[in-house]
Image 1 (cartoon, rainbow, N blue to C red):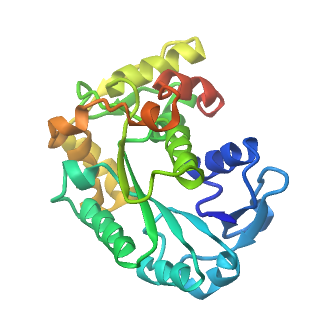
Image 2: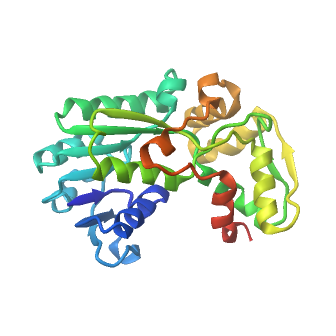
Length: 277
């Protein structure tokens, strides 16, 4: 039994699809609201709330491998519940900022979860992706409204990753040997600036999408309401304010692990065009 947490999210939903398509099973998807979940036929749907670790016990029963999206509850309690349930292997989604921006609060939080996992005695595989292509959805309201997209650090090019590529690496780690005790830094196939990402979305839509660079102060004022002050600063540092050259590197990890090339941002934009129409 493989349990996928965050099963309705960008990574979890793609992972369940990839596992199911290859006949892997049995599979179980964890969600807080089973009525809203739509999993592939044959995938068992279970309800649970990370904020209440005891509610996860039925979901963990009989589970051999766990795909874990962290920081949605008490990770120490969740990992302990998994250990007690007899889970043998955990694939954890962390962040590349653990190695590129270790001084930032969110990176330290992710590192703490990595260390908690290693201390459980369960086998582990850690995924450290860079910026998600799906972060571009924050521009969707402006693009749908035919307004100007405004973003800071328009010249900083990051190798944004398609969430399905994170899922592909997770699938391999969960189902094939040789991935226990491994940490994988994951990126997309090419660096792209925010301006280039908007241009890619415009090309898919077949119309012009205006873009304007704004200052860090302007961006911070917009982001505080969503992320809070510390997280807003961290996001802005990672996306251009405190760029570590290591963050800009394109890595071939996706292709090495999965045998398939990493998906370009343009593919993600094409697959999600309706969100911007």
